[in-house]
Length: 305
Image 1 (tube, rainbow, N blue to C red):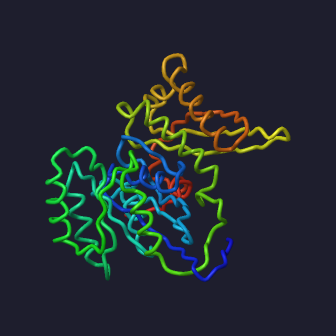
Image 2 (cartoon, helix red, strand yellow; image 1 turned 30 degrees about the vertical axis):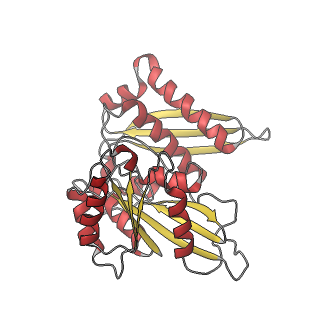
Image 3 (spheres, rainbow, N blue to C red; image 1 turned 30 degrees about the horizontal axis):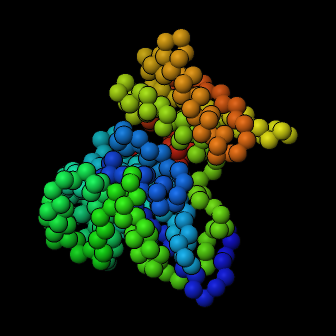
């Protein structure tokens, strides 16, 4: 890690927490100015805390995009929710992101109850305010939320449009503690490229198969080889739980897997800056959701029964 010099330097970890599909990954990507986390309309796509890094003035902001918090039903669900709260535990600033359209649902209410245990609540962010036509409803929602938790600051934003994000970023830059920077100035994430590559492919799978496939699917980068001409060969394995799911991923005549591979390869080539040769394999691994090794590959702790 690299330290930045200067008396005015600030650096801090900011946990973005919220219910599923509140827009956490989109917000982190917007704050960083680059894609560091998977974005999908399918809920529960972020499985582990991903750190995005941004510079605002003399401050280095390390954003922790946590998995959505919801009522867990499976072992994987529990691991994801535990990971989300773990990301918030040691953060310098905790920001609660609430979908302004959905308002206070059961998941948001549960998060508010748990936030009461913190010594202080930091930031409330209402997202998707551009989709709310009656603006009086926004003020009413803020009133209800701040009655539950006395947030220090409230922001109304649209993560997709960027509205209000600059003001939020400036506030966070002033809120993090003074201290040296933890990462080199040009870093935008601490996630290994192998992990990011797997997340990109998983995002493409959800893009095309979000109706057909459940969450019992994961992607692992099994090989990464760089050649003298700077091109990269990447091998990835897509794990599913049943043969029927494998046929869905492959598609008729292999058309679906080809489309997923093509789009993932193009995005990875842009990130790496060199040609990428991507090879995807689909394997059936029944009950992978109970395999501790798969959890380690995803950066999650295996929850005990």
